[in-house]
Length: 475
Ligand code: FAD
Image 1: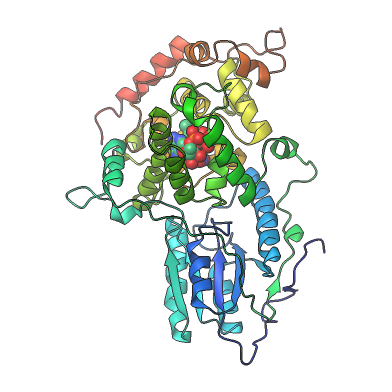
Image 2: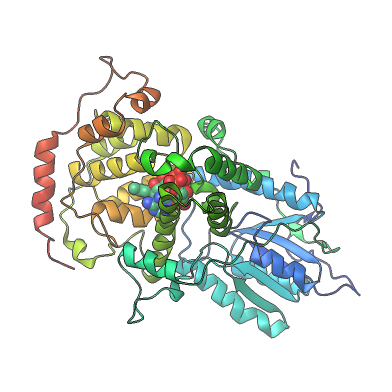
C-alpha cells in the first residue's frame, strides 16, 4: 500500500456514521483537481459541516469517453498532488473506481451526508450522470448542488439576440466581453474540518494509471509537473516572462512563449477565473496586444465548450451535417502510421508528431499543420486524428480537441474554410525559419536516414479540393 491515506481501504458499505457529528458535506472532485477557487469546496466549508472529499474514476457510465494514455498519466500525478494537499489539511481523498452514480449515492447514504457539492462539467454523458444523482439524492434530505468552476461563461448564458447559441467565434467572444465580468476567484482554504468517520477508498497505485512494460512516460515526466502549485508557477512565469511577446511570437514553435497551461486547465488544477484575473492584474493600466490575444485564446476554450454543450456528439459527428457526404479516402493504415510516428517526410509535420509522442504536447501552430496534412493531403477522416490526439496529448480535452479538429477539417463551427490547405513546407519556412524546432525533434534531420515525402503536395492538394467540391455549399 503505497498511498498515504486515513480513509479505509475496503469494500463499499464499510463506512460508518458518527452520532452527534453534523451531516457531512461531500465534495466530489472531477475535472477540478485543486483547492483554491474551488466553488464546491468553498461552499462545503461555508456550510460548516465536516467534509468528505471524493474522486471517482468513472469509465462505466453510458457515453463516458475512456481517457487516453497520456491523460491517465496526468491524472495519476494530479491525484497524487491533490491527495497531498488535502492531506496537509487533514482531509483524506477517497478514491473510487466505477459508475459515479452508484458510488456517490452510496457514499452519501452511508455517511448520511447533508450535502453533495460539485463543479459542473459540460459533456452530455457527464451531465446525464449529474442529473440522475440530483434526482436521487433529495429523497434523503441531501442538498445536491453544482457550481460554475471550469468556464468563465456558462454556455446557456451567452446567446444571440434570438436566444440561439453562437456558431461564430468573434460575435461569441464579443458577447462574452459584454457580459458581467467573471467573478473573483475564491481563496485557497486554510482549514477544512474532516469528517471523523471512515469511508472505503482504493489505493491510487492499484489503479495502474501510469504506464509500465513498457513505461513510455519518461518524456512526459521531463516536460511536465502536474498539480496545483506547478500550475500557478507556470502562470506566474508566463505572465512575468512571456506575455509581452505573446502576440508576436505565439506562432513560432521554437520560441516557447505560450503559457503551456492547457493540461493544468484541462484537469482544473488552475481555474480560468484565476488565469483571467491574474492576467488582467498583471497588465493593469497597460493592456497591450499580448494580454488581449492571450485572453482571446482562453475565449477559444470557452467557445469550444459552448459548441460541445450544444452539439454533444462533437467527437464523433460532423458539426456541419453537410460534411457527412465528404469522400474521405478509405483508410490507408500505412499513411496513418507514418503520420502518427512522424515519418511523412515533411519536417514540420514530423517534428510536431514526434514532439507529441515524446512529451504529450505539440505547439498550436504545428497542431494546425499536422491536422491539415492528415485531413487534406492524406484525405484521412478527422476522427482518426482526433482519436490519436485524444490518446497522446496530456491536454486532451473533451471540447477543445474535437472542436479544433473539426475547425481544421472544415466540418466544425466557425471552421477554417476547407480550401485553406496549409502547405507544410511554406509553414516550415515561415514559422521555423532557423530549423530550430525541427532539429530539436528530428534526430536524423538533414541526413539520408530522414524519410522521403509520402505524398506529392500539389497532387494531394488538387485531390483535396476536388473532394471538397462534393460537399461545397451543403450546410
Ligand atoms: P496558450 O497559447 O498559452 O493559450 C492559453 C490557453 O488558451 C490554453 O492553455 C488553452 O486552454 C486555451 N487555448 C489556446 N488556444 C486554443 C484553441 N485553439 N482552442 C481552444 N483552447 C485554446 N487544446 C486543448 O487544451 N486540448 C486539446 O485537446 C486540443 N486539441 C487541439 C487539436 C488541434 C488539431 C488543434 C489545432 C488545437 C488543439 N488545441 C487543444 C488548442 C491549442 O493547440 C492548445 O490549447 C494550445 O496549444 C495549448 O498550449 P498553451 O497552453 O501554451 O496555449
